[in-house]
Length: 211
Image (cartoon, rainbow, N blue to C red; front, side, top):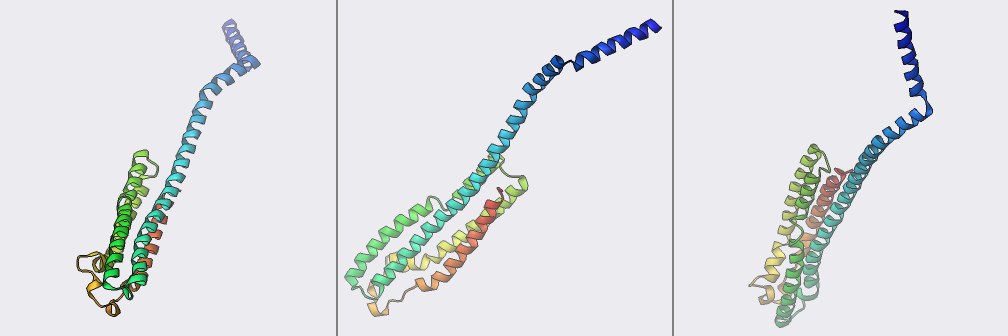
């Protein structure tokens, strides 16, 4: 019994000495390092890429929203400039000529808006969903924000229905004497600005979901 116990003790001591040997510790350290370091580095790199993508998405949301605001403002400014330059001073012939120029200008501007304004928010949503950039709860909030944004955009466009009808329709105001033509854009200016402020607040909240 003593011999067996002694042998067991000797083996334990040898194992202990082996594990404590500097070369053994180096080998174990190298093995763990070769396994753990790539895993940790890969995980850290993935998190860094994800964080960078989120920041980029937030910036893109703000930038695209601003671009849409600029497009809408150009349409509004086009009507305002027409009223200022042509509404109360132009002869019927000159009025008709300027109205055709306005038509080409507004149609081109609205086409630019139409190609982006109604789609960009849903493109951002789908990217966030597919790449899992934000949590399911944040994704739900983003969808709600997009619905509010779309509703706001529809109201903004409807504000421009009146100048569109008055200046671009088949029954334009050139038939009305110059001194009786009334501008419509002053009535639109305030609600147009209010809707933009509301839209900006919606977009800021949308972008904050990626932070």
